[in-house]
Figure 1: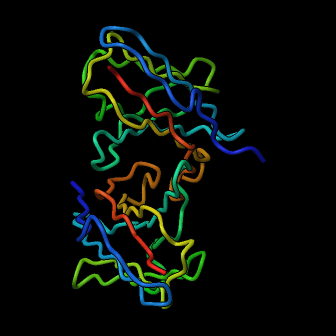
Figure 2: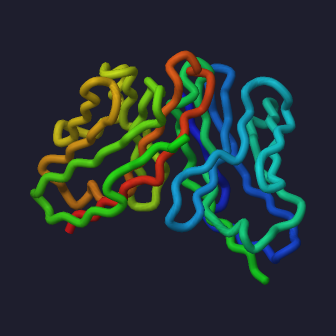
Length: 114
Length: 115
């Protein structure tokens, strides 16, 4: 069984500040991990993914995440927040044998203050 | 290349009525997944088609939900009769059959409101 915990349903940062969205996972097998973003009135867009290669993963829009097996974490970061980053972010875990079947976290809404 | 397309984008129905959601996957994608997000909670897996066959329907909540994928192309998800707790956003996703190690691509979702 797999599970995902996103710490903080709402995160607010100032424009230009560091963005840190936390994700911890549980998996009985080596996981694949994903971060998705959902902008208002849009679908889910893949930001980045970890698939057992490099532990530091770079994604679109300047986001990156680091897979830490010892901490069972996959936190999402961006050095400098932009107003356009305001959205809801989802962390997800899946098994490598069927990456399309994912277990998602509850989501974190990111607000960026001017 | 067109992405995953879902119809309708929004649907408002009364309790007890029937609603059918449609998903058109990316052309050539044999894997098709349905998910839903209820009451702002987590996005939950409903089922997985491989072509026209149901590979995994472990997430289907009850027998009021019926998913089909005749011909292995588009899929429909019917809710009959709809209940208030069925309100939420229903997502569809697809991926290539031979690339199970690749994530699926999501559609924009159908927002279902049962009143």
